Image (cartoon, rainbow, N blue to C red):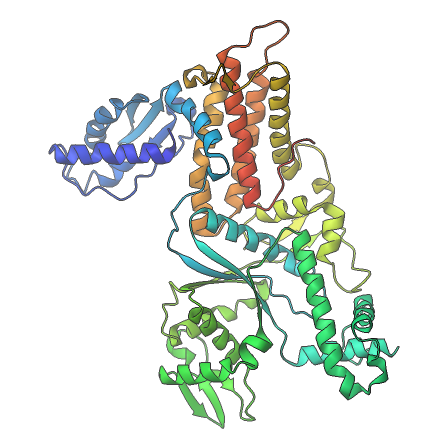
Length: 552
């Protein structure tokens, strides 16, 4: 019996009590159950009587007593105790608790997936690094977290489009092109240009695509170099993201999608129709102060040039026009000032800033002992971190902390093959479970025998089995909460709890018989529990973009 099934059962008992006239209260949509801090108090607990007692005009403890009698009669419930002012402590019988192991194995990769966010259509933008250089440590956290958030949202039923905004318009692209062109001719980069060996490397790639480009004068060569170097740099960015296990559904070009398409002019006109645009001092303004911004924002300068803010507004409208009611922006620690202005854009566009746009701000991450890139010279490249520490170690470590907490990674810890290293600890639990399954098979232990599933949930009676099953049962609700609060670290921390419970169980309960002992249904049923644990660990690691190794 999962927590969700128990919650539904409590709701049904409450509804029965209301129909019988024992209680007069509205039955809530969801009744929360949770693990008691002290396992001696039972498998699950609920404070529903405390929540509804007053509303029913009853003493909460008396309310709880009525509900306890009905719950105790349910199949699979061993006992129900009323504690304190009205807490209900519920203990399941071994068969009801153990049946979960078989259900998990049969569900496979779908275990933990839910429909809590079904119907939500979300555009989530993250990373969006300028295409003027390689991805670096400043982009690493959002690459890991953004991808994991998208995964947990999808696991909860949301339709998520992961989007990368390519800032390929504006002066920085000309600076970038001039830097590459200068190095092509052996000249120093212009003042304020981009240094680093990668600029020289991009020049070589431009020459491969356009062997005669150095024979052109600078004015003729510049657009060719700009486009070819941009294409080469974006190829490098996408390659690095792929190595990090991150993929995007859409790469949105600012140049093509906003400037060349006329979307910015269209956006200004649409916002003017909404009544939020005004003219002053020769410029065109958006009255964002009506919606909480600290000052009104210029859309078009007096010289007729649109501002970055105009591009932000057009980009928001583009997401809306493309059918995304919900838009999530993942921004760096230096972007707090963008929150109110982006929400003001949403309001000016006729949307609800509290429902149609969500802005997550992430704090900085650093790595002790990390070296500056030899190619870029002044940054720590993401691809160097992957080569040094491994994709799994970096992704897991970034996913196990809330985005709004500053973070320093310890390379010595992440490279350790010991229980001190959280990613190793969880991955080793999975590898250990697969090794246990192989050993069991070699000893003749299989989940099915003589054409039947040799599973008897009532045989899972050891205390460590109840503990492990309870944590496996809680996994779907953890996934749901991770999606609801955009906090994949909840999954990582729960996997560590499962790994701890598994190691304890493994040390106490043998799957394969010893010596000449006969294979029994105890062994076979424990194999089901072992494989259920493997499945949950693999499912959770996948949500974090981390591999589940078969051997370590």
